[in-house]
Length: 194
Image 1 (cartoon, one colour):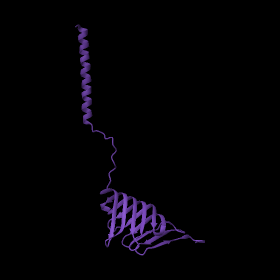
Image 2 (tube, rainbow, N blue to C red):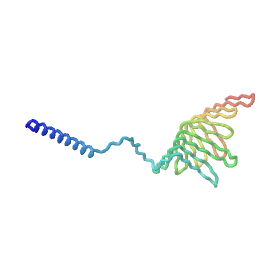
Image 3 (cartoon, one colour):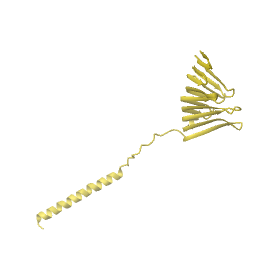
């Protein structure tokens, strides 16, 4: 093998050594770098507990008084409240065995008082096929009252009623609509509008 052959062999060996060094340096540098995660992490939540398909029933004197359902519930212990999504609330009447159903997009259950705030597309189904719609409602547990100061629309057999707010006294089975009330009542051939 002549000088040219030895020189070519030396050159090939140097190229192989150089490539090996570059490859080894790249592997070493790659191992020392933190691996980036592909999956997105959920933002941290300060909720103490998060539940799916939550159900809570309030009992009084051995009977169901109300039941609260939510598709999602986030409990915040420092504020003593639970944020709710896709909420359903049912009140059970004592002797009549009738029920009042409320549905809303969102809600808040206050742990200390058991008061409940509802908001967003509220639909209230009352006994005797009456339906009430509004945007906000507040259940005051100590008084057993559901109330709102947002406009309300009530429909039922022969009745259409609109007002600026409403209050329902659960124990007395009495509903009041107040403020700029307009009503339309149809009974048989009689039609009364105010």
